[in-house]
Length: 217
Image (cartoon, rainbow, N blue to C red; front, side):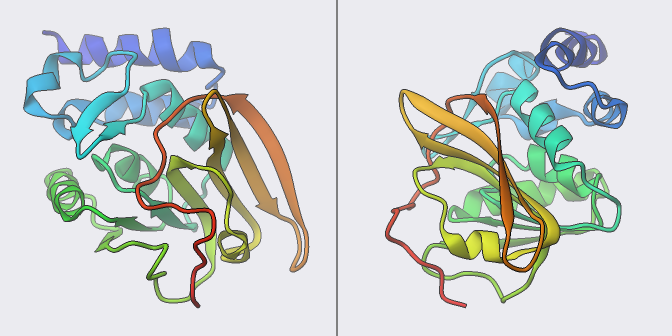
């Protein structure tokens, strides 16, 4: 298998046609070796247009969705990012290469440990990992420039919006089957947020999320 060609085809045939046109995002996805983030059994389909299984009932987001997510966040090199749902660590690496600092949280210790090892292999050192259920134990109170939820959620807790800095952006997929909407929330002042509905999609829910759960700051 020609890995470099497969990565090029992923960008040109999957990601770019899905309205991902920012060259910095395309270049980053051309650079990052997605194959090291998948189960070895799936290495030959690491660049396929599909959500690859990770175990524990979780999947790896399709490349085109990762690209759209990254493009809509418009990260800057000075940004701090909270990622909820580490998964394989592929999106974590994309975020880390686009921002100053990433804090990534997952309920599954195996995911956090595997992702940390993969990022170390790539000499990515601006990520902290935490194994926790944020719906019971929110990280140390802090404001973020960007927040990313890598699984769907039925109702977005207000506390997550409050954790954004002014001008900060939050990406989430909200709803339940058969209708889910990718949404970008931008905090425009201390008391105002703007919602932008981006596209329809379908991803598994975040494990442990219940609409009634509240974070304790």
